[in-house]
Length: 199
Image 1 (cartoon, rainbow, N blue to C red):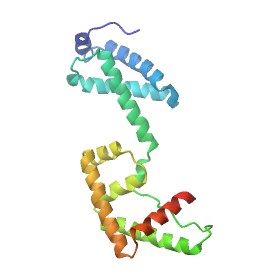
Image 2: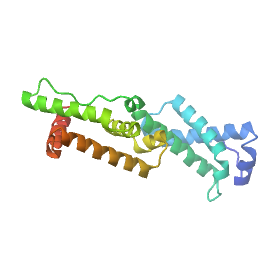
Image 3: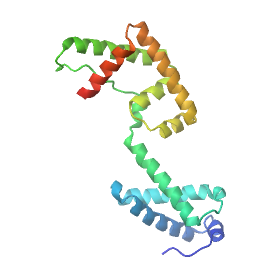
Image 4: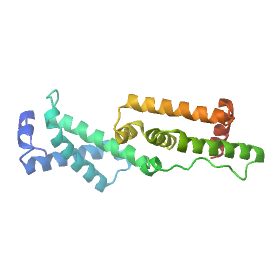
């Protein structure tokens, strides 16, 4: 049971009282367990999320404006952190360093189709490797791998608008490289659509 405290008492006691921190952690863990029960989150994760939330709350005490109950604000901090961690887990960060593009399918009915797709993917891979800056390459590979925009922006230490511009400039360079190699936009769309259907 969390001791009833006013907002000002929480702000005063949390930084100096381990008892207050433990009570807050227990309260947040209980709330997280209810909020995340459909996510299949285990006990150890709940413990980690609650502990991490208390640290975030302590770091962000100066940002608490008192517009709501302190515990309501702390729970919002905990939920943001937990959902952020769960989203990040669904994405494999190693794909920022390397990505396996869709390869030609030897069982495809039309061998000519495989050759064209193989040429396209080879050209695209070379364009990604040689035509883009390191940051553009990271952004494009992460996008292809399905990285969450917020996670990628955080990793690159840029704002979402800047990330959008990075993607836009990278796509322009890739389109130009493919055009120079003789691929039209329509060819690219058709081949990638076929590759996606066969996955």
